[in-house]
Length: 170
Image 1 (cartoon, rainbow, N blue to C red):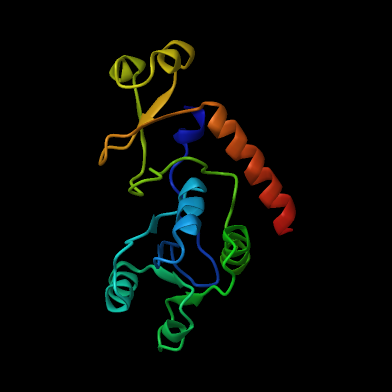
Image 2 (spheres, rainbow, N blue to C red):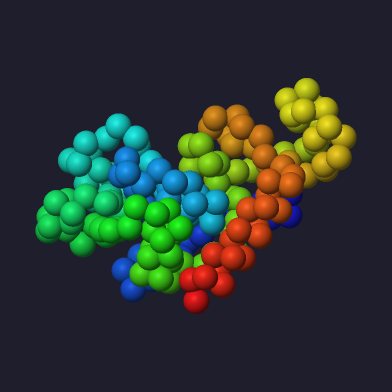
């Protein structure tokens, strides 16, 4: 898959470090959007505030939260997002952290956040639908959860959506 030849992002912003995120349980769709864009984004659905803060601190991540009480804690790694609308949340994060939106699309597993690796077509035989195997030549795999990815119409639709986001975020 030509899109997956890029390395996952190692963007730096005014926060002065490689940007990695952890999203609280209220930001699941945002976490998925950030993974689509290629950003290392954890989403531990059942974590308590203390666990999220620990992850952010020990792994050098920015904690993205909708919890305004958590935002009052003294920590440089917390960013409070007020909107409940995922696209608005993404816009806020992209602008705040000066994220790039089109360079490393689809380089992370959407389920577990692991960087994807390209695999030979012969490896996916019997593991993807027959139609997909017949009509696609490039595949990627998550080495952790073993999920396979390919550039189907879902990718084209998402790329169109991202183009709209980019126009909208200007």
